[in-house]
Image (cartoon, rainbow, N blue to C red):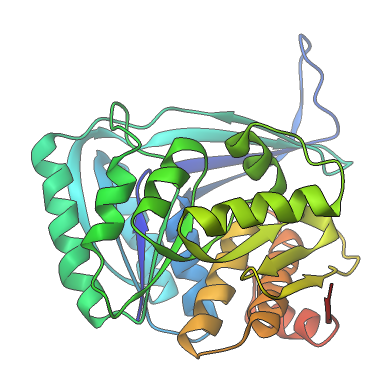
Length: 307
């Protein structure tokens, strides 16, 4: 089983426009609502790969039932820590050039009692999970150090994957992480510097390794991704596809990486699968994951090089 922990669920409203004109009236071409959150997206991706997924994390009374319905539809089991209030709403505007503009709401609040309850659930569920994925932001008012406590609650037999940034990433790394997956922008912002070339980029990855990660999977968007364990570095270039939405691409990458790690795959196969799943996700509009058939089609077309 692969356990995913959603720290901050969201209702994503994806709007397609011809163009986004600030200060003017904009006409919507299409609109979809997805009941999502980074770790929920990962759970759905894992299920679509044919693996057993289990989702936990924080959930809120308003709109919470819609998340359960969405996970039921995907065959994902779940058990949430429930809170008063509503799930945050994020707006994602996509124009005909596939330019994405995001407006993100802030998460609700949770009590100290609920924070402790989630740690207990992670401790229990991870005992039967080959991999535990924890990703996303935190509820309003919760300090970044909570990420350290979350990963310390994971049982030793479960591989640990973190997908977050900034102080939350550093806190997670203090607990020891098997794989961390930032994208290029997140890594630059987390480390507070711009990468001018490949050596700078690898230096940034090595810093995460020094801080407690065993593997860094660095997403480069349409350019593919890099994976390193400090001794071996690999690159996988994505293929050209029609981009309908970049929403959930990183989560698709994490889902495939988790599946490969559960199978004991080596670095090149983890990387290749991650790039294939991330690329497959961007071909869809209004959904937050890939289809298995598209994933397998792209997987056959991508290759890995060592550098």
